[in-house]
Length: 302
Image (cartoon, rainbow, N blue to C red; front, side, top):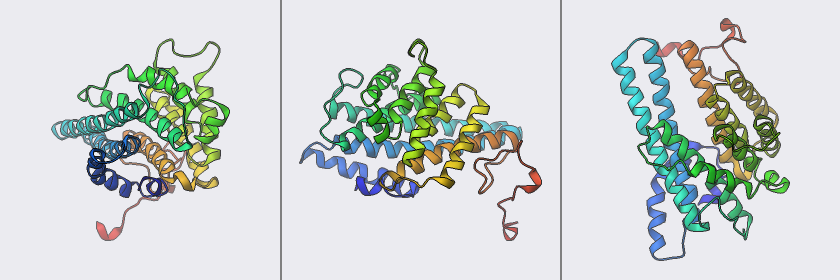
C-alpha cells in the first residue's frame, strides 16, 4: 500500500487511507513481523490530515477576528488548537514507531540495510520535529517532549552527506538547519543556517521533492521573516512550473506544496481576508494590481 501511496498526487486520498487503514494494518502486528516502519508513514500521513484541518480553522479565525466577531473567532481558535493537538498525537505515535524500529534517535546512527530504511528514518525524523511544533500550537495538550527536537537534529545528521542529501532531497540538511534557528547554541560556528536551508531547498527542487523548501518557509515564518517567507513561496511556485515532481515520491512533494500554500493562505487572509487567489500561488497583494487578480467566484453562486 505505502509504496503506491507515495506516488499519488492526491493528499485527500492519502489522508483517508492513512486514517482508515492505520488501525487495520497495525492490528496485524500481533500475528506477523513488526510493521513499525509502515506505522511511521501511516501516522505521518494521519498527522498531515489533522494539520490541514487546523490550518482551515486558523484561516476562519483570522477572518472572524478581523470582522470583530469575537465569540466565533474564539471558537475557531479553539478548533485550530484541538486539531493541532490531534496532529501532534499522531506525529508522536510516528516517532514512537520509529524508535521501536531503529532504537532511540539522536544517539548512534543505525546501519541501514536499504534505501527504504533510510526513507523511513528521514521521514520519521521530520515527523518527530513536526510533533514538537504541532504540540506547541496545540497548547502542549499531547505532551510531546521538547527533548525530541535536539534528538531529531542529531538523527538527521546520520544522512547529512552529499549522497544522503541528494537521495533524500536535501531533507537531512534542512532539518539540521531549521533546528539551528530554534535551539540556542545548536549551530556550528561560522555556518549560516539560512544559507544552509537555501542549499537544501535547491537540492530538493532539483530532485523534484520540495519538502526542504517547505521547512525553510516554516522556519522563516517562525522567525517572523515575512519577506523570506514570501520569497520562498515565490521560489516554490516558480519551481513547480519548471521542475516536474519526483514520480516515486510524488506525495511528499505535494505535501510540501500544501504546506507552502497554507502559509501563503495565512498571509493573504491576514492582509485581505481571503486565501491565495486561485492560480495565484507565488503572488501577493502588494506586488500585483488587485484589479488583475481574478476572483474565483461563479456568478451563479451569488
